Image 1 (tube, helix red, strand yellow):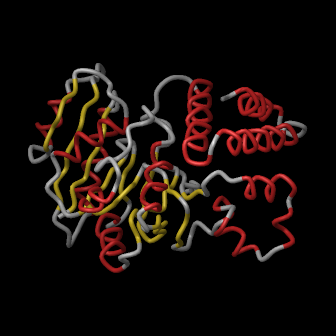
Image 2 (image 1 turned 30 degrees about the vertical axis):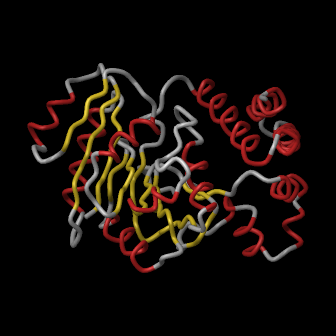
Image 3 (image 1 turned 180 degrees about the horizontal axis):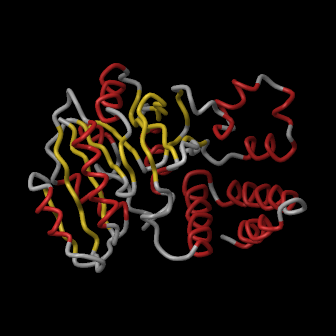
Length: 292
């Protein structure tokens, strides 16, 4: 069985559509749906039970953040596999079963993501590389053009991967994030890290799975519409600041302060060069230069 966990924070309408899409498209897989509501104020979340009486509903009195809310849902899970699914998504095909088969067929895979699409069908780059000095140097200087594109893309520049093909990668977004329940016992904390309130937690989760010998996998065969940003909080400016701050904290925690400083400066220089053509990139250059 797959335990599907949705964290809801003032996204009632999207959550309801997401649940409906799960029932519509999921076949040949037993599943349960656990909705964790994070102190919402937009609508009485209990109304979901009127249309979907089989779901399990957990209500938090306040917004505990994405990671902690998911861990609460995981504690209530009864499935062999766990799928963390954003409330602002809709399944387009039998994505749950397809992802589950990936885990069953490949013991070296620890985390499976899906092909994420905007509502207009454009693909989202949900498979990424861990921040690295070499990756930043290759991208900033464009030296990657001198090497085999596929090898460089897989190792350092996951943003250049063919999003229509299944592939291993460093880390995947927490938007669609499936793993084996038992693998949590192999993690140091026996649960998903709650270091970050929101943004960056998925990168750290994949890194911690990598540390126990399990890989992240982008499964393009599983297709999901993602209404990007509908489950976020705050303004875009606040979002960018949080993402960059958490990213720097992640690099510092696992690579050290000097390594993080080098990546920050390379990122800042890269966005400074890009700001010549696109002035909006200047804010990223400043944020990376000043964030510690």
